[in-house]
Structures are given as C-alpha cells and as structure tokens.
Length: 122
Image 1 (cartoon, rainbow, N blue to C red):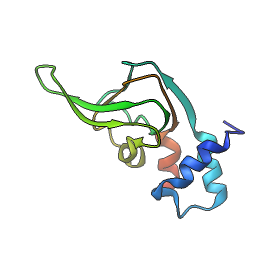
Image 2 (image 1 turned 30 degrees about the vertical axis):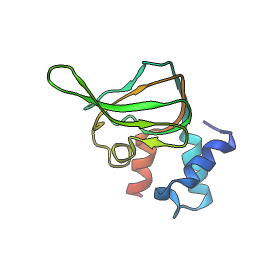
Image 3 (image 1 turned 90 degrees about the horizontal axis):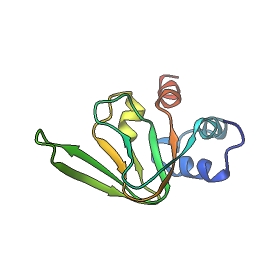
Image 4 (image 1 turned 180 degrees about the horizontal axis):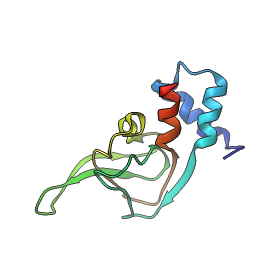
C-alpha cells in the first residue's frame, strides 16, 4: 500500500524492535501496514490461528483474553491508544497466543506477519 499517512511510519519508528532499521526499511514496513477498524465486541483474531500481525492502536480499546474449558473468559490485558499487541506472534510466525476483541470502536494499523518475518530472515 503506497503513500501511507505519516502516522503509521511514526508508530513503527517508535517501536523498539525497529529502531536499528534504516529509513528505506521503515518506509517499506509502513507501506505494508493495513488500517483496520472494528466495532465494540468484534473479535479481531483467535488463539491458535495464523499470526494476525502486529497491531498498533490509534483509536479505541481492545482486550486480550483466553477462554477456559467452560467458556469463561480470562482477560489478560486491556489496551488503548498507543499500545501494540500480538507482537511476538507477528515477529516469530507462531500462532496467536490468545484471543483479541475490540472493547469499543477500534482503529489500528496492522503490520502483517509476512513482511516482518521476511525482514528478520534477511
């Protein structure tokens, strides 16, 4: 996706994982980012699924949670503007470690796992 707004580049630049990258590599990542929106209650991804990318929240709130065998929900973390989630899964290509859902109307930039893994593998 060419011509991404500067905000996505700034979000990427602020993450410690990407500080060693040069400007062309940062721009390449920003071009891969996808803007996602979700309504309150919408499931963003499920535990055990293919890596859902690295999420960077720009508006709203999300929860990371697990379900026990009885279907009861255990909320692991509540996230808001400026937070990232699913970082490790996106970087190492492993399955999503937990479920994620929007708690309110949510807007987030998502870096897909594939470009991140390609960057790491060189």
